[in-house]
Structure formats: C-alpha cells, structure tokens
Length: 165
Image 1 (tube, rainbow, N blue to C red):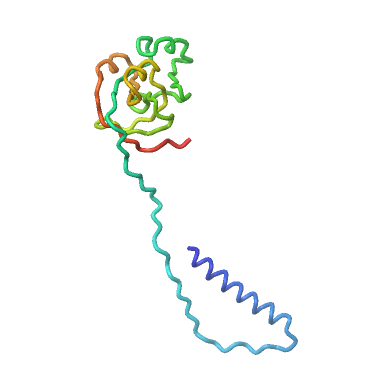
Image 2: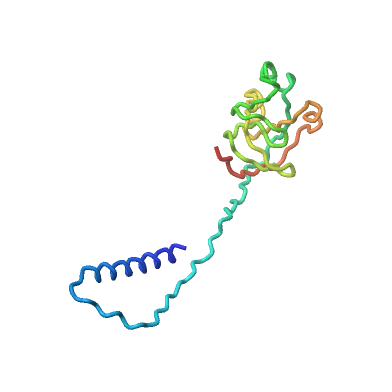
C-alpha cells in the first residue's frame, strides 16, 4: 500500500512539474511523442493482522481453592455490598468462572491446568498467603455450595499475559 502511494505521489509530482514548467515557459513546447510507459507495481508481502498469542509460561504448581462472597469466605468484607454486587480488591466486579484472587498483580491472566483462564481481580487473605505461601489462587464462585464442592487442588498455573486496562 505504501509503495502504491509513493508511486502515485511521484507520478502526480511529475505531472504537476511538467504543467508548471510549461506554464512559465516563453516558447511553446511541442507535445511529447506518444510513448508506451509501463508502471510495475510490486505488491507488498501480506501483513498478518492477527496478533499471535505468546506461549504461556509455567509459573509452577499452585494451591487452588475456591471462595464466594459469603461471610464464611470473606469475613467482614461480605457486609455492605452495594446492590449485591461483589467487587474485588482491584475495584472490578467479580464474575464466577473469570475472576480469581491471588498475590499476582491485578489484571494478570493465568491459565489453570484443566480449569481454564482466570483474571486476578482480588487478593488472597494475608493470613492464607502467610501460611501457604505466594503460590496460591482462589477462584471466585457465585455461591458457597459450589465453592465447597470445588475443594482444594494442586495444579500447574501458566502466565498468559495481562488484561488491557
């Protein structure tokens, strides 16, 4: 596309130059002899507009647990939820199947082996991190029964990237 625009610019410049040279010339210029001019326009290599996703990076084996917005799971944070909406420590609304809590930076996208992709939008309780270490992810569920049913798992976690803010 750039090559075509460049060639068109050169052609237009040439034509305008000839016109202005002819306009300011004292003697009439004979018309040029007709010639065959061939323009060869090369097409650029196709551009891949699909952004390739980098390979996930193994972060290690993590302790995976589950939680919901109830008082058993969140303690004092379960009180005074505006309109029943559950917000994580990042300020984002938590969504079951998408949101998780972790010491990783907010917006980090992780893939949990066998479970799918999650976005860090909340923080794991400090006492949990102190007791079990940094390699901890808590998956958000809509209800306590589902969180209890999930239980405790140790799974590989991969770094996928970050969400766009």
